Length: 120
Length: 169
Image 1: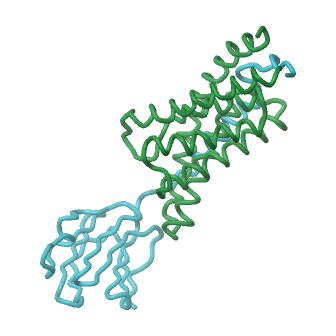
Image 2 (image 1 turned 30 degrees about the vertical axis):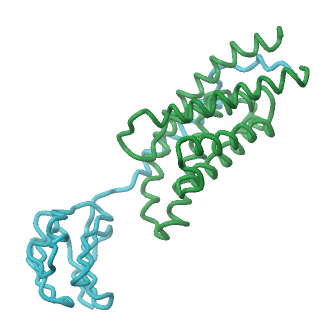
């Protein structure tokens, strides 16, 4: 076996690796959401800005779901479904978070870039 | 070094890697998916002392026997475990062979980062089919930097002790 006692614990290359890895800090994504997308029954889609307070009433498959957008947070406050799981989910505010109401076929998710309210 | 001695040391390090892998699962984790990667200490040690083939062997034994012991063999998390280990050994080997100015800490950090990056990419491509898991990539790279440094320093410390003994043996 060749002797490798030339190994020191930290060499110049290690510092470069540490610095390169630390630069990943700059790539930590912005978790702040900017708009919400509501998909109903997989065919109707609504997009609203997150920072405008409003109350929406979306008619899904079994009834009307009330969605409240308030100070950058979204919640379902009233739902026709039997278990009310979507209401128990509470308020969501971060990018990528979702509220799903299966009986009423409603999916709310928070997304990144801002788009004006579009109704498709 | 004679073959006998070599086999004995590799088996010893394999056993140590498996033990650390299992013991590590006893440590409570605040966030799932984050481990210290203590078994990597011995994989790195074997890589430096003996070479790529032996290190890959220790890694495979660690993954298969370790996951068997904690009851995760052939579960979805086992796929993450084995692919992460393979990538980490390959990256550590390349760093050890071609990085003349890289030492234990750097190799260990690169190995830890290869491990987590493989797992995040796998999770986002294979299992979920969406890219939301990629948001985890940069925080995980920072975490691997910390855990990789810890295992790298430990591996260097062990290397100093072991090398002296092996040379005198």
